[in-house]
Picture (spheres, rainbow, N blue to C red):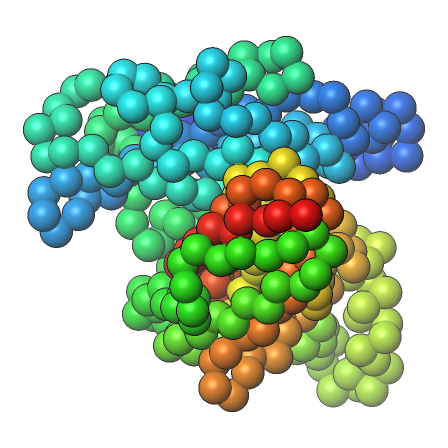
Amino acid sequence: MHSLVNRRTSAAMKVIALAAATAIFSHGVFADTYNKGRHVEPAFEGWRPNDDGSFNLMFGYMNENWEEEPDMAVGEMNFFSPGDADRGQPTHFLPRRNRFTFEVTVPSDWGERELVWTLNVNGVERKAYATLKADYLVDNMVIASETGSLGAGTSSPESRLNVPPVVTVLGDEIRTARVGEPLTLQTNVADDGLPKPTDRVVEARRFAEFVGGPLAAAFITEDSIRDRLLLTPPIRVTVGKVNGLFLSWNVYRGAGSVSFDPPQPKPWEDTRTSANSPWGALWTPPAVPEDGNYTVDVTFDQPGTYVLWGRADDGGLYHDGYITVNVSE
């Protein structure tokens, strides 16, 4: 247990240091340097057991770039070992930190072996080493905490009751499309309504009224609270995330430019205001369709084979769906 606490404390301190450095240099050369040309760091997030005795090893990554979304096909620069080089990993990498992006199933007799994911992006090779060591056991509370839905080391009755949403992609798993012609995707998302959606403005107002009393409350407006949150966002040991159901379609494999209409919430940790990200200071979860069916139009600018990844996320937990699209001229 002590090693697990030390590991997570060390990780939290690294996040704080990175956030401080980013704030200091956000308008200078540092920010420009991190837009493109940097590497992607593969990450082993932990493991969890399956009912049949097998185990899922969980992976994510840190794309050091804020803008560049590198593509690296499975092969000498993007592979697993030992065994099959292709374990379903992404070949298109979204910006910055992406946690719990995919899972690799290993058999019940995996034992003490390591599974290694190697990435070489922009000339820098990095590896993630996955094992079944007890320190890396993951459950729903760990996922919710690591992604920012909960405070570090905390839980609540509703978070313990929460179950992941369920994604059902309506239609064929393999589609065809033409360059420049929108392809319509319909996705059903079923959810239990937990955790309850977060409204940071309402939370801040309640806290201000509690501290200042009824007299102070008369001078507190939502606009003033929004301004305060924009200027001085709360300091956290870990990332902070707005709870609320959303669906986000993105490219998982495929090297061409792909656009989504309407624009999709970001599944990666963009903490900037107005970035359409659950990790942003004033992000508001989109309205949930009454029938649970989401519609998005996808347009491709180059022919090729693409794998699109749809993630439904309620703030704490997630579920993924995929389709393959063969795009012709």
